[in-house]
Image 1 (tube, rainbow, N blue to C red):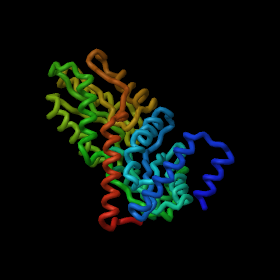
Image 2 (cartoon, one colour; image 1 turned 90 degrees about the vertical axis):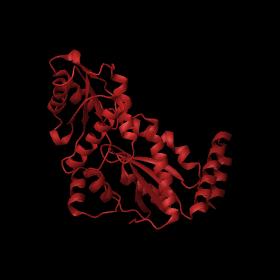
Image 3 (cartoon, rainbow, N blue to C red; image 1 turned 180 degrees about the vertical axis):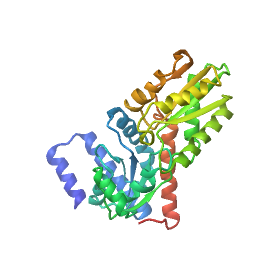
Image 4 (cartoon, rainbow, N blue to C red; image 1 turned 60 degrees about the vertical axis):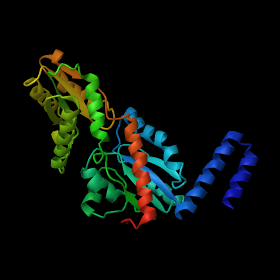
Length: 316
């Protein structure tokens, strides 16, 4: 009946042939997905969110780039993006839409660097995989909606598991290096109070990889997020540590996307505070865009679908 009504509506409205063809293609994809797994499966790419339109667009661009590759097997019906805070569509909004469209399962792909209070506590409570009253009360105070969906939810691993992040930082450092051998790199990341050890391990791991791949001898790191009250001092301190040992300091933001507040103000101010500006090299860039991260998103979805088909996966 639904297919008949859609077809009838197309005839009455005289929709352009190209649009009608696209609609039929989507219907065929949905039918194939249901026949392959017996379930209607959606993918939700989840990120932190930002007031910055440019930042948000970088995350939307991932969805645009990976959608066809994820859906071409017929296992996935649709791919969507959700922002955890600051803007719509929120995670709760997208999960409600999946329910309204009778999805059986949603694969949540967190586009986050490593474990944090957001990935460990907030997101599981937002999608109904956890029910911590304190976390939910905190989310409510921040204006973040939670929603327990009918669809079963699977959350994939984070970006720090593969080497894609380390390769990204290495590529960007090489692009700013003059090859003199008298350089060091200051890695500036957001940080997380609850999982500080894991964040330190992440940047130290990146530093070891960077040294091995480039021959750069000195690595330092500093935080720029809530943990340090968005202060520029840690950035300056990390740069000064490099300049005590090397002639030049290369500053690399270990941030998912480009935000005017972080790259353009907090980190930039830390750079500007350094006495000898000629010895500092800084580009206001971010991890995105990166084709390898997009490939990782496709890969993690394919692996998760295979796991769903092959064995029972722990879900809510």
